[in-house]
Image (tube, rainbow, N blue to C red):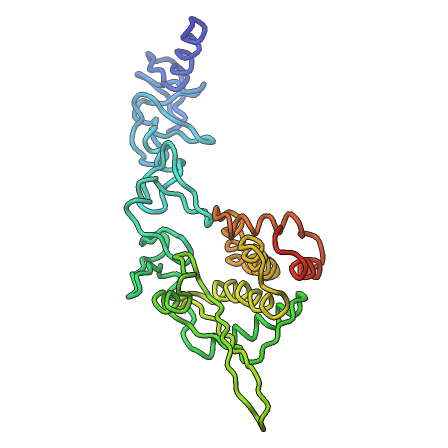
Length: 327
């Protein structure tokens, strides 16, 4: 450190330290009475030493102080009030800390100490989510998701019909004959998806064919079942249904021979478009999570589809999928 910097540093310390001086004819700014003994001079004002008080704890400030607006504080009190607090433990945040998509701030060690919700990805703790629990299928879900989760089978059917209508409005028409929805836990989803299962899977579209005959005429009939994870709020189910319904469209309208990145990226894109059309804060947060997904098939595929088709009519993507197998 050079001489100029040393003097600058000392000058700064002098500014932040009140000056105790001998009595003169001064008026105490705190009590508005004359000072007949020792006094403290702070930024051009005078105080009885016992009247230079912290605006937070109301105790005398001796030594260095911090200032905000026209109020003075002990450095520790200032830090307590004005520095960011950890949303997990409420302690002051110093140095590096994490901020999630929901704006929650927390110490890095809490990532190791606390489980994260398998649905919304929040840290599960009393301050942020009101706690949570682990389900029998191994999922850790926060109470925010559990309390707002879909409860009845009729509600799942309602959401399926809602998504079919909304996607039709976006330009995606799907043959809904023999189409059904089944809510399952992670074990059920794993059973339905088989070798295609992964822990980040939230839904799976299964299409099976059956044959028969009527009046001697043979026919083949397809049954489409969409499996979705249970115990989660409606908007997350809607995001999953939009993705899986695009899989249904691909089966019905193309050779379904696209690369995984084009296929999953396009299905994610339909979910993304739907979420962007919904006036809901959580929907927009889910779309951000999708965009930041580091998975090269899902997140990477979505970003490539957006780059190629954003701002264009949906029909351009649909026609592309009928003629091409990769991006």
